[in-house]
Length: 561
Image (cartoon, rainbow, N blue to C red):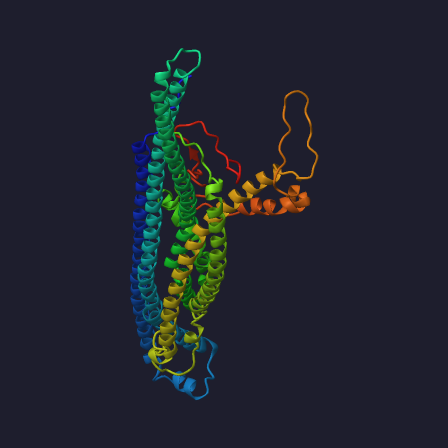
């Protein structure tokens, strides 16, 4: 059977760099997608402004024509008796009364259409202009955060590359030292074979042979020490590589599963709510102008009611599946036959790993408390912003209240949407609150990213150390227990020096934390919905890829060597 072919260093590095290159291309494409989305929104808002500006001109022209029509026939009736009687007691014949009511209705319609034109120009169009400005401003702020997150992600990938190179270097040195040690052992065996008593050796040849044997033994001891030193360095480098690999995969998937969705939400902050308000202003004006048009306006209202940032975000991400689909997990690239794909808890590094686990546990506890406070503040601020942008101020029914006064149209709608003093103050408060929210949102993302990396290392160490302890429990016996005797030449097994009860004396309580850990570990990032059309494309965990020796992929329990 032919020996398996293992990847060379250049092949491993080329594969890693190719994967990182694909991720970097995705990050660039994500920025372009966000820019395109905002440009489409700005263009849509510009089209809406042009549409309502033209409609306002049509409504104003229609109002003027109605006024001319009413004035033309009212001028004819002012000198008649009927008009004098109408001004005196309004006691007219029913046909004449209908005629005057018809003329009054025309003047009322003229006033209503002028009001509608004024609402379009001074209310609806101004709302669209504000939404366009807000979209551009929010995109700029979101891109700053996205750029920082992408830089942090690339730093994590570069760190993984450095750790992998270090691991490969130390493992190569370990293999080289092992090869030299085997060579020295062969020389020693060869020298011992020459000194076998079956050969007749003269007394004068014994001293040179002893000197040669001592030199070989001394050389073997030096190479044994060098091999042990390089082997320990290789184990530590591999452990660091595995920890960094776990943290990197956690960071990458957090960015694609959670951070991207949050960034898109930041770009959409207030957009749908503001557009909802603007279109509801238009609906209110049209419903009050002409109730007979309700059937057609209901269709528009249904569309307005369907404004949903979450659905739009999902559609947006489905439009660009290659940009927002999470990449495959990074695999552990074993080096030169090293098939140990998990962290080793051998005695030389066991204490260091336990200390590191305790430090991670303490650090995570502090960070989670701090980040939870930041999250609460951010959520409270977001609620405030949502309250600001969901004010129901689109009802313009007051503009259509009529009296017998013949004042101009401007006198009834002089207080427009932007002329109210409270509007300017509310806008300033909204922008100030937005600035505070983005600051807290940035802090929350930074903290959660750090927690994600540390939590991944913590969980991996916890599983490793826990499995090592379980192996210890399974191999210990009470020192006072009887030893079984065996027939023949088989010797009795020596007593253990440990005084530990199997499963701490209670199997149920011993396996309970492991059951909880298993349940917790299977409900993490993978429970999030996939952004790419409801399906995760190429979501593969990176697995251990051995390169040269046939070493089983297991955890090495503490004290097993």
